[in-house]
Image (cartoon, rainbow over all chains, first blue to last red; front, top):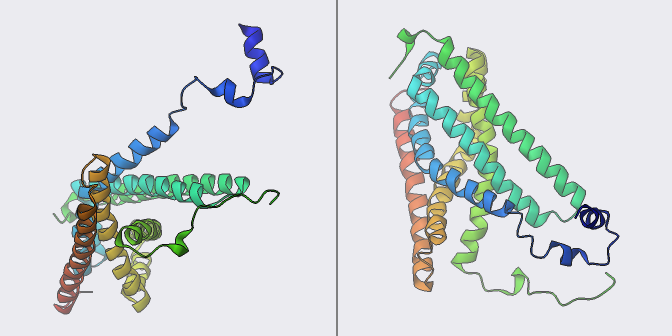
Amino acid sequence: MSVKLHNAVAGDDMRTPLARARGLGSAKHGVGHWWAQRLTAIALIPLALWFVWMVLRLPHLDYAGAHGLVANPINALLLILFTATMFWHGQLGIQVVIEDYVHTRWIEITLLIVVKFLAVLGALACALAVLSVWLGVPSAANIP
Amino acid sequence: MPHARPLSPHLGIYKWQITMVLSIVHRLTGLFLCLGALLVAWGLIALASSDSAWSAFTAFCASWIGIVLLILWTFSLFFHLCNGIRHLFWDAGAGFEKPTYHTSGWVVVIAAVALTLCVWIWMLAGAHGGAA
């Protein structure tokens, strides 16, 4: 068995790559992407509507007021959920667009990596910003 | 190219239909919303940083380019959200009949425009009442 496996990996048997892959089943990566895209989409329906509703209150608030709005624990939690889901969903979507339209392999891979790094950076930056506003403000300043 | 292979017909030869337009607009609004995600990040970081950083952020949002972008982002969000729900129905296997997906397409367009108008009428009416 190990000899056979070694031959297959080393590529010195006579079978074509297709013959070796046939019967092993799919890698199932596409299914994981598909599900993640749908679940984040479903989560974003209420989260995005809530976000718009919250942003509509901002023009009436100065810095302290906006600070208080985000420092409200429920708003802070929903903001972290919204921004994390938003960056995750956006990154999944950009991935598909890159895979569809970028045909030079090294540029495709580079863009995919850059987009994923930026998405993690964006989501973490948002979460840390919300946390610092939430935890840095005395509860008396909270505006419900 | 070493071999001239037959190509499938490209976009140019098709008559424009709402289904294909909405499919393209779904992708474009999705990409544009990713830029909007950066604005959200900027706003939150500014809020966490200082009064002056927040002032710079709100000044950008209140500038004419900021308002144009915000209106486009509002429409993009509502369009992508409504059309995304349409996609979820398709994923569940519903709404694939030709008259249904034409109708649902127009419903998405009308809903997205209506929701965008609601938000901006609310926004401008509120701003008129004497806010920043």
